[in-house]
Image (cartoon, rainbow, N blue to C red):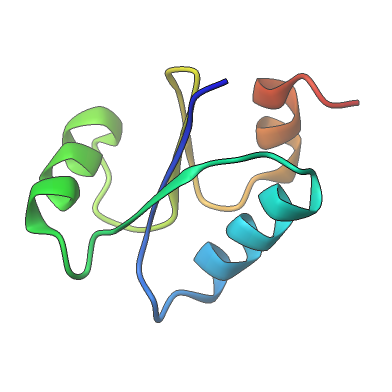
Length: 77
């Protein structure tokens, strides 16, 4: 499974997303788009969004901490 999180250090929803994934034992790659402008451009390209968090789960893009969408993309019941 390929899970990417685009986040910033000051975003509380980003922290919630990462803690949720850790709690489900889902490994992910986290990019701090506040510090990495190239990854910020990647995030905007894949999501059309400038806000965080943005997740990509096996190519499915989820904007924000949407637990139902995350579970669905991860195939968690």
